[in-house]
Image (cartoon, rainbow, N blue to C red; front, side, top):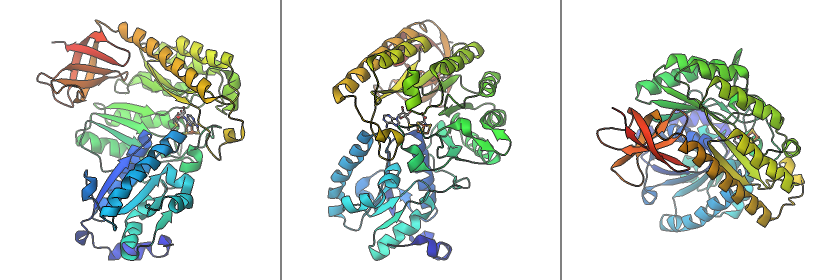
Length: 454
Ligand code: SAM
Ligand code: SF4
């Protein structure tokens, strides 16, 4: 197997960027962090003359940036790989690479089982990609790089962003929380933060390039640390540096979310009044087994403070149905908590056992049927809560940032409120990137419809 560490500097100096005009096709799966990583990968590759192509048939290299959080996510990738056999057959020198969490989790096993795969690269090894790819083109030898790093943050790399009015800035990598169900600490390694000054610099740069809204990303942003600066300090610094840009962040962990962060959010008009705060379960017994480190009381305490400081704040969460030993009464507590908090939205999942995690050792004793039934009821419960909240917004005025043309009709456009609600309006004279004042006139559980206010 090719060992890149031997001569990385020498190879870099010899590489002729101008002579390389190979094309890369990338598909990204999973969380926003993966989408942000793909922008880093494209930047690393473009420095060596690899350009992105949207056309898989036209590509020399196919990369899949993958997710391992649930078994279904991995099955999706495996099915996609089966589909890729055809592209390899037509073009045997085309390289197929797996990046991200699945590469990190399965390592050699993936290379051995999936014969069409040439390259496996984990989330902390993306700087090596151009050399690994070049070596495969030269020697035909497969390559693997899956070492996790305690320091890699890609701080100096400028992501290749698609033109748009919204952007991500990844502020930290990894996670030290070790929730008992979650594979992320194993696939993305230890927590490490980027420098505050470099994040602020990147925010200013993308604002100058036309970005109107930025989302600061991390698996647990509340653990951000750059010397004496915590995440509230970072948020404040960004808010002050780009006062005309909307700022969001995700994801917060309820154990670490401080009063100082809520106060900072309330203080600055350009920090969006929206928190995604995964609760996972409404039962203290299950939360303990999940190693989430907080109680339901602690969680609802944060919500009360947030609502008091920022009336009308948008709230969303993640919920897992059917965690090991979950009784009907635990599950009902989750439904009750959803009702009490009145989340605007939720991402809801059936528990999926993941190798290496602590919960993998527990008996997965909730049957598929019960998990699915609870999940469907949770989804329906959330749909009703969202609809009720949205109905109360009828006749209210909101400001939205126009993000895209509506998927259903080119005559309509979609924008988002500060509280993260999607709003559809007639296109009229508006363009993507405009801030528009609207009055809500119709709603369903997922979307608001509005007319513009003159
Ligand atoms: N760090 C973020 C957090 O704490 O919310 C995101 C982690 S994970 C990518 C997003 C969500 O996936 C989690 O909040 C959890 O609800 C869900 N999840 C993670 N592992 C899971 C598993 N083994 N089975 C089902 N859902 C899972
Ligand atoms: Fe996974 Fe928990 Fe870390 Fe989120 S905080 S990435 S759920 S271990």
